[in-house]
Length: 410
Ligand SMILES: Nc1ncnc2c1ncn2[C@@H]1O[C@H](COP(=O)(O)OP(=O)(O)OP(=O)(O)O)[C@@H](O)[C@H]1O
Ligand SMILES: [Mg+2]
Image (cartoon, rainbow, N blue to C red; front, side, top):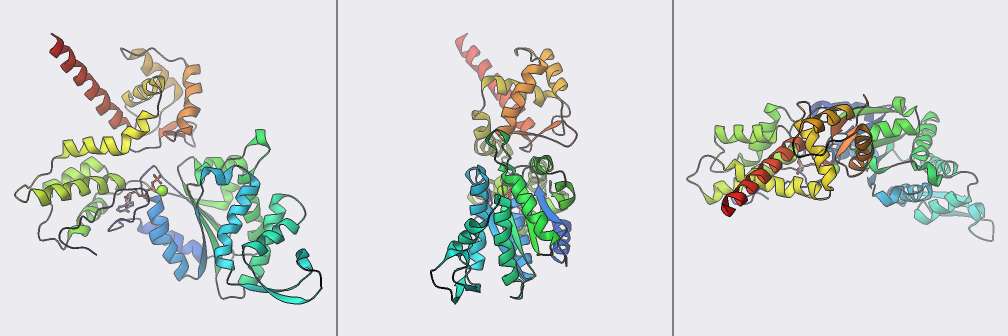
């Protein structure tokens, strides 16, 4: 419910925006994937932090899939769901059972070891039943999971649905762990690949950071053919303006053109930044109705404190130095290599230079912390948008503080 005083903007992880701007080509393409008579393509939705993956999936893809008669199964993968194959399978079955518990099957009661006497009975495909099928199937986790999903499909296929889509957010946390002999990712890919070959209309929609796709391909090379990757990025000028203006079109006031330009330029097309800046700007203009321009510097400072600082605080001093070197590169916002970081470190005052070995060792830790990722060309990029600019602002402020401090000592 919007009224004149309610701030409509929604900065936050997975918070539905008041107006979801752009993303029409991706949505249209996703709609086509939903029409596959035989599922040969699955979808990966990737992009940097805060670019709008979760809301695109939840607010656009989900209703569309449901409208096209798909059963929508899933949630987001927490790290623990992926520690082992067993946990992954249990997780998938838990989520699936929300849909299947309303379906039932006539079974002979001694199948799957249910009861002593042999008679036919109607069983709901609830969690317990599915897990019993899972446990009773011999073989590896893939065989067990496959048996459950095949059984479910044999029932669901007659219930007037087009297919079953498994949609998982934060899927980049999925990893095979050779040292533990646990291959949850391989289980996921193998199961879906095999079911799809047999004509069962199951589809995977995985959402996550850009590390996701390389990781899948590393697990099973055929993942390259199984998935279509939708990489979502920044909004363009027009859609950025829509994201800013549509939510306040019924207000008695409007953002001035220059205020809109400032927001567009500062947010640089990144949806989270648009929501954040607009939220602050809205409050400011409501409190200061005579004002026309918005105080962008303090708003950026708040943005730094809210969005970036937390990601900076978790770093060691040496990791910060390394990222500071990256931030100095002219190509910091695109991609960078180990040797470029080494070179930059030699040219910067006040930093102990890095050897390539130092950098190679530091990088996996920065990847684990979700700050950078390795792209398809073997180079690295920031996983957090506009991070290089934050690092520069941060360094600048530190310098000013130090100068003030030494002035006050003089
Ligand atoms: N197309 C859009 N138009 C307007 N606002 C958007 C759009 N997409 C996302 N947002 C807003 O941006 C913010 C981030 O969105 P979301 O959480 O979906 O990003 P994400 O890519 O899933 O981020 P993360 O990688 O951190 O999970 C939210 O506040 C959301 O309301
Ligand atoms: Mg998200």
